[in-house]
Amino acid sequence: MSKSYDNLMLPWTNVLGAQFDSVEDADAWYMNYSRLVGFSVRKNELRRSKSGQTTIRRGKYTVTEFKTEHNHSLTAPNEVHLLRSHRHVSEGDLAQGKALRHVGVKTCQVVDYMGDQVGGSHNLRFKRKDLQNRLDADRRVEIGDTDSVATIAYFTAKYDNDPGLYHEYTLDDENRLRNLFWTDYMARYDYECFGDVLAFDAIYKTNAYQKPLVTLVGTNHHRRTTVFGFGLLGDETVESYTWLLQTFLSAMGNRKPKSVITDGDKAMSKAIKTIFVGATYRLCCWHLERNAQANMKNEDFTRKFRDLMLTGMSAGEFDKRWFALVDEFKLHEHGWVKQMYAKRHKWAEAFLKGTFFAGMRSTQRCESIHCYLNRFLQYRLKLYEFVLQIDRALRNIRTTEVQDEKCSVCTQPGHTARSCPIASNSARSSEANAANNDSWGTSILAGSSEHFSFYNSEASYEIETQNEYGSSSQPCSESTDHLWNNSSMPPSMGSNTFTFLPYPIIHFDMWPGDNSFQ
Figure 1: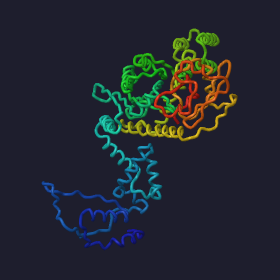
Figure 2: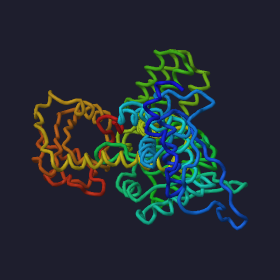
Figure 3: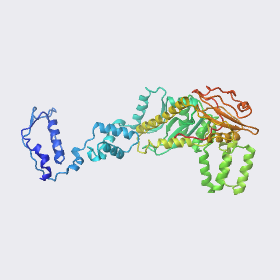
Figure 4: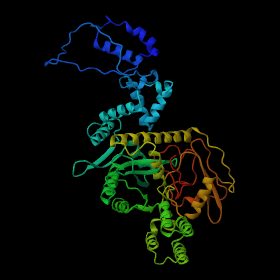
């Protein structure tokens, strides 16, 4: 035996005659001894009678023989923690690991973090694989035999705390979950307030079943993205999208949106025409611009197509500029060009101006939500875990809205210049929007102070919207009464006009910018 272990063994050599009250006490003593000396331990099988009683005599346990020799080399002290019998994941370590995994921290990073807490990973009582096995075992117990059953049970239990929760699902021919839709009270309330405009898109590789996730979103009174609901579909057929939109409509009290924005998927388009009858359907300008470049492979054409798509003009002016563009690039017989002209009422600003889209021309808000959700989702997630992660992400998004609400009430608006030539970026965006749009509708206005400038052919105007603590607005010149042609809002707006009303107040065709959730 190596001399390096002599000092470690001195306290343990004289053990003959030692007594223990239970097998567990003896086991704990010997486990500690093996760890100090450097070897692993395993228990022998326990013998019982046919009735299940342990056949060993009860009472004190006395050491009658103790051998210190081993038929193998002993493990060095800095490697003992790697031996099987000395590796153990405590309940505290497991709870901490679960908490970190739930917020998207990888297992290897969890182990590194725990190692830092105890002065290095060599001081941990387990390896990364041990923690991974415990987490997986605990996860299987939590989910149970059927993942979908656990998910539906989760929604049922959640209903006790959120009576506004709404979920529906369908089963396939083999009685397995096919489609799933869910929303909650806050999302339904948001839709009641801000549901004039709906955008939705699908995201992939977010769960173990490879089911596409459809997010249905809009924009709120802080120009933030707000989520109305989620759908998990078995496939992207017309039937599945029709079921999703019909279920969504039922959850929202059969209130249809006035405007819908999607990426132009054919199955989506057919479902929208069937369910959202009367809604103005707009194709995503970002997807159209990308398709233009893919089909034409000409940056000059793409630039001019984009300008034609986003510039407000009369229908006659649009046709004139469109045919000039076709003549310039000799595209009279090009299939994609013909197709786009046939769909011009769904994408050209010339035909869409006057319709409220809350500043959205694309599905960018869907993309930003998807980007944020990807921090929480991964392709290995089971359905139950998938739903939990989405709920966690949604809580974070709503925390941002609470902060916006507080800012709009408790923050004094900053000084806004009254000089028309000097305008902020938001003001300049609004100037362009106002110049390109002749008609105005009704919608939402942010509770926080914003500064907008409006122009017509004769004079320019500057309107400053204020929150509860702001002053009344003043025009730069001339009366602005004519700007409120068919609006129910009076031209004179008091300082309390925009104080946390749960319904739309006033809107115009385009917000200053298409800001997404960050």
